[in-house]
Image 1 (cartoon, one colour):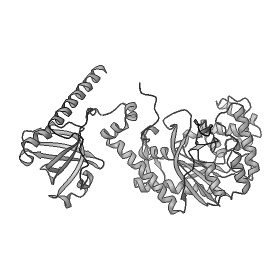
Image 2 (cartoon, helix red, strand yellow):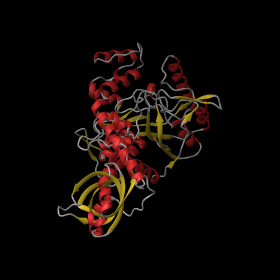
Image 3 (cartoon, helix red, strand yellow):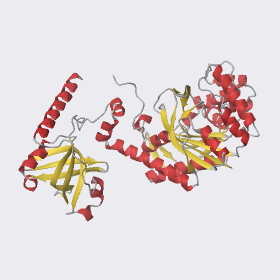
Image 4 (cartoon, helix red, strand yellow):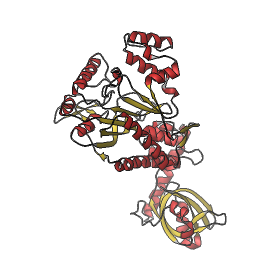
Length: 491
């Protein structure tokens, strides 16, 4: 490692010396903007129209091969890579020598003619060029690249320079978000923005980040979900709203968890969780078609078919299907816990409720088996404080989660709009919080007050953007799809 650092320091010293030499010779190491007519990808795609035409492009120098009086070079821009061909008798001896003094990583502008080499490679015959930005640090060695994941996440700019596949991942991410907006706008939803700092942590069960506003002398919480604000908009008369934005949760990190993440949440009046299933399925299927051109994807060598119809099954039936345990046969939490212990599940809480046990069995024994798209319906009320109770079974709620590749991809409810019931559930959450559960929700009096004015029957849905991008790009970690993921301080 020390030898590697020594080599890097030596290369940096050489670059700085060249930088100073250029400046002494009157060469501007940091030029003004360059007039561009085309990009590398455009030239590749439209060669038949551009052959023998003059173009002006810019890019980062990634390779340089000198052959006496002629040299070849490769430059890269956002659209791709293209070869340059530069001859001494075309640009003059002084400019030719200067071109060969450039370093890998330098940014240059080039004017020239589009042609194809004898080997059939589309190239630009250089007539003029200009140094636009002198690089002062060496890029990673070409054939070994940037392999250190910690460095890749920490220095994403470098990762993007040397790994074209990484750039493509974030292009796909952008396309996914853009299509979400197009789809929802076409369906009559209105995009809104709600606060990122909340006086009360709510909208989901999670541990919040806490900050302090000096002027107001009050603590605020970075939002864990926009749900309560969006439902207040439904109370106010909006019928269809959505928000695509960041949430923050002060929890553990894993390959599918980052402290800040992007979600899409929508709410629709006169809709229920069946409508939300339809929207979820159609939105994800159409996104895959639009972005990838197919509904059949491969994740970690496993083929997943997003094509309709997705399976719809209750949590009770899913647990029975995969474990053989039938929660319909239990009437108490004790009976349920005994059955769960028999299949190897342990509980910290000595007296968990029936619904808590059901959810625990599902999470530990069923989730990992849900590879193909499936809706798990009718979650217990203990873990669904904002969902409406089922009329035929008040221990369950009109809630579902969509799973693909064993990951929770979406969470949705027929929203609870009974203010009396909502207050009771908030009070139960407060008791859990007082007992030490710092993920339980706080009492939100203003939200209850809003419900007291009347919220129409409403369906709500949240989809995790980052996990969907992971799925559609076959990325192994959420850090691969977030440009600047949360990291420990650099040593």
